[in-house]
Amino acid sequence: MGEDSTNLKALVTGGGGFLGKAIVEQLLERQWEVRSLSRGDYPDLRAMGVETLRGDIADARIVSEAVKGCDIVFHVAAKAGVWGKYEDYYRPNVMGTENILDACRIHNVERLVYTSSPSVVYGDEPLRGVDESVDYPDTYLTAYPETKAIAEKKVVKANCKVLKTVSLRPHLIWGPGDNHLVPRIVDRARRGKLRKVGDGKAVVDSVYIDDAARAHLLAADALEGDAAAGKVYFITQGEPMAVGELIDRIIDSAGLEPVDATVPAKIAYGMGWLLETVYRLLRKKEEPLMTRFVAKQLSTDHYFDISAARQDLDYQPTWTIDEGMNELGEWIRAELL
Image 1 (cartoon, rainbow, N blue to C red):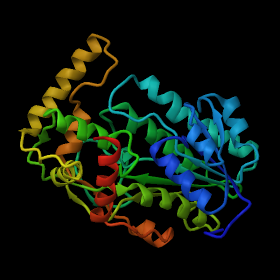
Image 2 (image 1 turned 90 degrees about the vertical axis):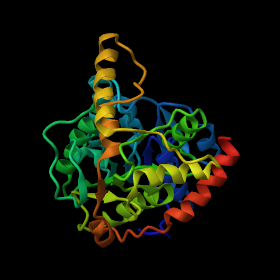
Image 3 (image 1 turned 135 degrees about the horizontal axis):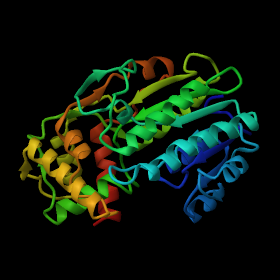
Image 4 (image 1 turned 90 degrees about the horizontal axis):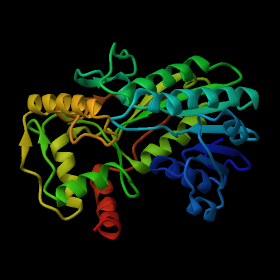
């Protein structure tokens, strides 16, 4: 395959999302035929020449229709978040993945690239430079990583000679076009509502959007052989940094002042527990200002060894965080301010 491959047809689930759209754009650069399955309507994808289907990945019929005729599937769609009912995450994340696997088998798709998450191995303990041998935790603080872990295990188990699978764990994706992380940070900073949890020195990994997307194409290439089949890979920029510094860099890109206000980590965790309890009792659907998962993520180390991705996928980050922040700043000033 590789960059010159043409006449291949790929399905990207969640093709209208932040990561999905970046994958679509890179596939189009390779002159692939691309189909997208998303819950929403994305006229911009159609304008790019993408065949768009609209539906729920938990609907086996629409998934089968989307997979039919494709050479490879990039399963990116998922329900992400830190709050909500377990069932609301299980349906898209687990049932949706089961539908994708079934459809790939029915329609003789030979390669599946699955977008997982490093949070599948995060309980509440620090993860310092760990590789893919680290175990899944016994318990999870929220439904998203738990359901993604179930799905990842199913994808790994499904790998065989007729359907090769690979799972990627990109961590903290950011960059132009972000519709989740960056807008929330910038909005809270502008309103004076942003606080650092702990001393802000917890070391975390992140990955720039273009490199996160490119890793998926490299994984697809690698599945032409057997080295990556049935495996999982952490995907990051290879530049771990203090979470406080990363937040400040994003805020600085927006031309805003750094955040000085802090909340002790134990108080933030306790606040998260209390808010979760109250929100459940009151059956509130909106996300609490703080949760236990967020408190832990912002106050404990979690960075990863990407040696396996470098070796098996030939993955090398092509952007530095400095370069990515320059691009992000231009986008923020044009789109968010």
